[in-house]
Length: 168
Image: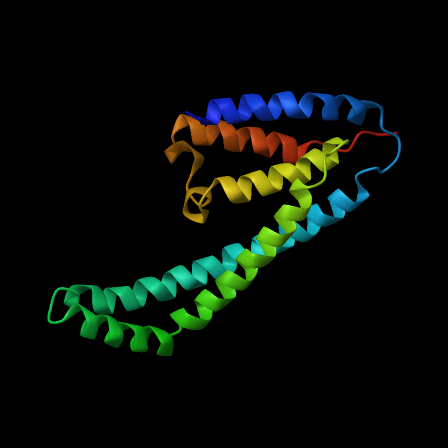
């Protein structure tokens, strides 16, 4: 069974050789990774905003239709719901949400394909891990309300993302 603990242990084992060269790095070998990390951070911020807008619009239409879900023919109800959904602010909000999610997925794939050799490169990977490892609603919660595993992993990612670049 794969647990967060085994994932973190595996990640630590994989990253150990990459962190050591970071301490002696005097150039910008992770320039592409750092650039992608910046693009990813901007796309993830846009996704979070789009996701909040979509969830609000989706909740509003669901509140209208959910009480009637058990009345009448399910197919008729769903067709009526789909027409109303498509005409509501939820449909374009979902499209915007999905557009930014696709951008994050594409950038995340590019980042994961590059092995970091600096702490700044490792921070780009941490941004992707945070985004892919936690639902937006979890990231919006107060850390004190999270279970200890989620809080510990998020605190670790905060540390990695906040490490200052090493001086040459």
